[in-house]
Length: 302
Ligand code: ATP
Image (tube, protein in one colour):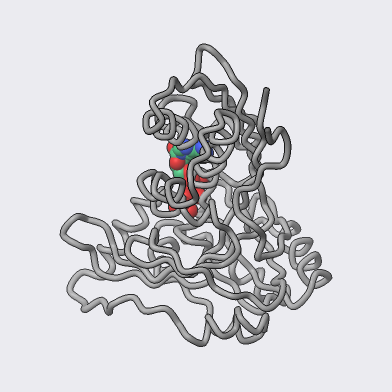
């Protein structure tokens, strides 16, 4: 028997970053929006598990050992429930890898939901969220989807109301960026300056609640953007190309290097994506809407 779970990517519409804490992590005010670019994780009973395979354009960049977040999720659930992790996980990967869209986190959340259904462990939502938080700061949001404010390292989530659908374009880059390297660059750029406490923007939360794209465009922000641009200066070209094509807002997605463009409607988004593809500033450009639900069983539920 198999269970397949579909899980979305995310864009951070606000990413406010505090100073490095003594443990090296940063406090964040992180407003996540789940968007319709998806990975699918299929869990199949397999006596030689846990095993993981991956297919998709970026599959070659995905680790297939115990560091894969899908494998770590399966092991964590099996250990808590005292059972063997006899599962084959197959990832159909469509979320850009190392793109700042939480693809690995998405696979972790999806594998957890898939194994829970396959094994009949019936973990509570709280237990699943607890395992997600242990796996990584972005993993709980991949489970819940929609829109949410993450505080702490980003893992303490408060769901946010969204009053409409937002239209986005995502431009992928020719290479990835390491999230820890971007945080190190953030620390380096901030040396000697006072970094304020990260605070969620009420204007941004109100814009989401109203479904108001213009107000959201005025409020989006990403404190990691200067660090991502410092490590990857060519991203400035992609941001400028998207603005020139009519985007209401252009920003680096999370730690980058994917760039995100907010559009007024579906037609404008399609045109911005066409224009971006015609430039040499990105590898490709895709449209997606948000919010969308988090990790969801799409086939094989017992
Ligand atoms: P985030 O937005 O959460 O910072 P990201 O989108 O920039 O993350 P990921 O696609 O999650 O980056 O990949 C980051 C690294 O995680 C990869 O380089 C890879 O080594 C590792 N990784 C572990 N498991 C996975 C997975 N299932 N899919 C992709 N990468 C994975």
